[in-house]
Every structure is written in structure tokens, then in C-alpha cells.
Length: 129
Image (cartoon, rainbow, N blue to C red):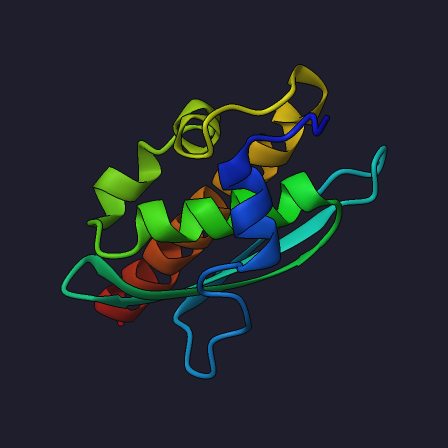
């Protein structure tokens, strides 16, 4: 019996939005030195909306599934809406995660939030020039 839901397994086997975007506006990177997972989230923004998202994850099945789910949840959202996405949103989207794997959804949400903050910082500097 698997510790993962069917949805986790589906996102692991058929990840959505996987890969580095060629012309991304910002990237967020998060890792966990304990388990070794590393995630990169790339976002393309137009009119304050995430119009495209890509990612690269080196990690376990849960890490890959959470990044895939996060990309689906964030795509098409405004930056403010995407900043409100939580690890619980990611886990709920996957039908739940084992408690020992919740840190994976933390990494995915944190990497997205970092990408958004970097995007905003970069565009603040452009506006002030």
C-alpha cells in the first residue's frame, strides 16, 4: 500500500509545467539540506499575473508532485493571490501528504514566494530609474 494519494502519484508520474522557462522574469530557489530536495520555480509575469510558470526539482516523489501541483495552483493568479498560496493549499490539492513529507510542500510554496518577491524587487528598481 502506498503512503501517497493517487493524485500525488499522478503528479509525480506526469508532472505539469516542468522545466526551466526560456524567458522567465524571476526565479525562486529553496532547498532542504536535511533531505537534499532542491526546487527552482520560474515565473513569467504580465500585468501582475503569472502567465507562465516552470520548475526544476531534484528530490523525492513528494517534492516533484508538490512542485507540479503548486505550478497548477499559481498559473493564472495575480501575484498577490499567488503569495497567499500555502503549504496546506498544495497538500490539499494533492489529496493530502504524509506528515513526514509536508516539508516538501513548504519548499514549493516558499520557492514561489521567493520568485514573486524577487520579481517585485527587480521591477521596483526599474520604476525608480
